[in-house]
Length: 547
Image (cartoon, rainbow, N blue to C red; front, top):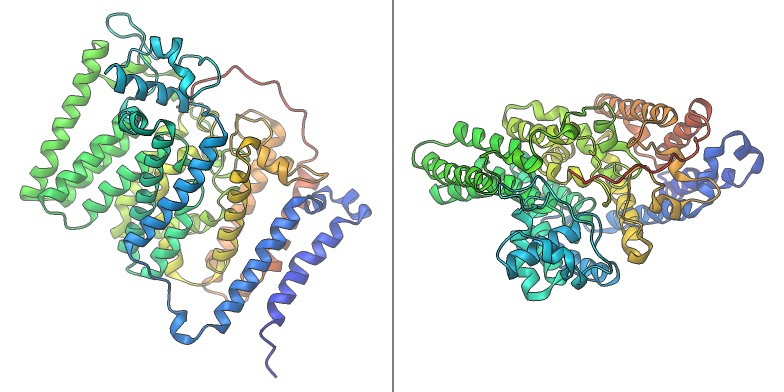
């Protein structure tokens, strides 16, 4: 006799969550395995909510008629509108309740000066005009002095130039609205890249849902260069991978040319887009790309020559900065796993993108891989790879076009293994994001170096979640061991995912919520037994400007 439709989801919730949560309230067990105490706090409620939503999602799937079970498809304008409205609504509320932070006020000061004074001499803005958006005086971020000795801001002028008209019209709120629209455009461009890579509209829509969440969601209302960089890169790549006419080729060149103006770390990505154009374009289309690209490159160098007396963008830093020669093994694992600045703790759905990276070896997707490496290279070599005071995963936002394609390839390749966890991972990240923005004044989104992450503190009970997530922004023996434990677990999980595509028994483990929870409990037990208790918090270092 077949099992009733409700039995399996009910058993998953019971065995996957009820038993571990019950064990977490057994003092004798927690004394032996302190990681069980993680389920005594609000985190358990989040996991129960995710499990309930998964059960409801599956119930709706079973009760829908056959014609309604087709993969979700939506027109581009609807996706763009939904994302822009959500971003704008959340962003305006957030901006109304919390002052700018990190590098944001410095970009606003530059936009203010460009609009009112038509220059980047910020001395008067730093003296008194900061009061329009900051509760107190700002500590100037100066780069190398100009050729005439006057101070020059340490940040590139591209984002302030984009923000200046919006700031003139509506102040900071206008800037937030502009960023919301650009973030919606970036998510849509990633969706179109996923569609081009797989030809599957359902997969592309699933990728859009993932990409539209964190970290892009956080940077749709924080005034940093990452969102416009992601949009410009994705748009240029999308045009070049198609069959653009002369107008499309010229537009692709303009998007690529915008990247160095937004931030100098995007110069390698702009160069990679130029090489891709040389490979893919011919005739008048190539001419249409090269003319604006060469003109923009010449103008870029002439600008720095006029300001600093040297036709080099490195003149902004007075040469190659020492911080750019600080390659460390911590940066790449930190970008993925760091408790404050890593991608996976706040957006675990991108586990599937990591599983899809090996599929990028296909000939048709080599441009995405090459450009993604060019985005990543300057970041991992920078001492402050985490980005300073900012929301999580700041430096990986421009990498979203690559991650979107890798995620699409993994979802399209097989419904087994980690693909079965797509919904659960997506809902978990959405729950974390909703909590992080629910009360802007709590500053759950803003992180600084290795200081305890407010979001994990808010979700913790008697046992701190942050003690079980590595902090790689500083040198700590325990965090090194903790990072190695997480890396080993990540490699094992990706290996099991590859095995699940060939072996049914392994795949069945991924179909159960209980297996996911058991895996986390085993990792927590391994941390308890091998890593040990956390060390005292080190003293804070001197503040540094973000890359």
